[in-house]
Amino acid sequence: MDRNAPVGVFDSGVGGLTVAREIIRQIPEERIIYFGDTARLPYGSKSRDTIIRYSRQIIRFLRTKEVKAIVIACNTASSYALDAVQAETDIPVIGVINAGARTAVQATRNRKIGVIGTEGTIGSGIYTEVMQQMRPDIEVFGKPCPLFVPLVEEGLLHDSVTDEIASRYLSSLKGKYIDTLVLGCTHYPLLRSTLQRLLGEGVTLVNPAYETALELRDLLKRQHLDREGDAFPEEEKYQFFVSDLADKFTSFATAILPGQVKETRKINIEEY
Ligand code: DGL
Image 1: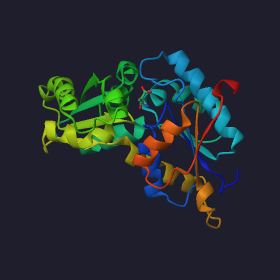
Image 2: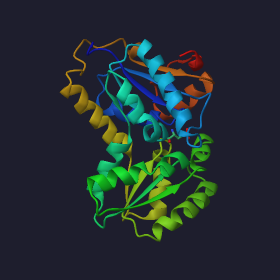
Image 3: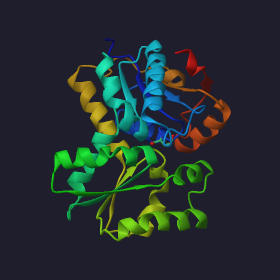
C-alpha cells in the first residue's frame, strides 16, 4: 500500500466535513478524498440494510481513487455499517462511534452520559453498548434529535427556533443530571454554542470528530501508512465528490472549511 495515497472520508452529505476539518487540523500533511452522498441523504431515517448498501457503494467508489484508509464520518453509517464493511475491506476502515464513546467515558465524573443523534444512531443503541463495554457502571441516556439536521442545513445555527427545539430535546436529558453529552451526529458540533448555553458549563460536550482524527493519525503511524512524501500540489490535496447538487455543497462546505473547497465533482454513485 502506498503510504502517500489519500485517505477516503465519507458522509451522507456536508456534515462529515466537521470530521474532515479535524483531520486537516490534526494531520495536515495527509491528502483527503471526500464523498458526500447528497442525492440520498438523510441517512438518519433509513434502514440498516439500505445504509450498508450505500456504504458498500461509496467504499467501491473511494477505492477507485486508491485510498489507503477510510473514515466513515457519518454516525448513522458508523452505527449500522462499520462492522459489515470492515470485515470485507482489506484497508483500514474506522468510524466515529468508538472515538466519541471513549472520550465521553473519560470525561464523565458522575457516570451519567447523554447521547444525541439521528433516529438510526440512537435506535441502534450502539453508543450505549460501546460505552458500557468500556465501563459497565455507566448510565447512558439517548435522545434522537431529527430536527437538528435540517435546522443546521438551513443555516439556523443561532436562531430562536433552534433554541426552542433544542430546549425541548434537551429537557429529558437535563432531568437525568447528565454531566457529559456526546454530539453523536455530524451536524451537531455546529450547534455547540447553543447546546452548551442551554445545558450550562457543568456539562462537557464531546465532539467525536476530534478523537476520530487522533485515532486516524495513530492508526496510520502504527501501520506505516503515514504520509512521508513531498508536499502535494495544494489544489489537488483535498478533493470533494458528491452524488448531487455540487454547487450547493461547495457553498456550504466553504463555510466549514474556508478556502479549502475549490471544486466539487458530481458522480453517479449508483454505478458503483
Ligand atoms: N451524517 C448523519 C449522521 O451523522 C446526519 C445526517 C443524515 O441523517 O444523513 O448521523
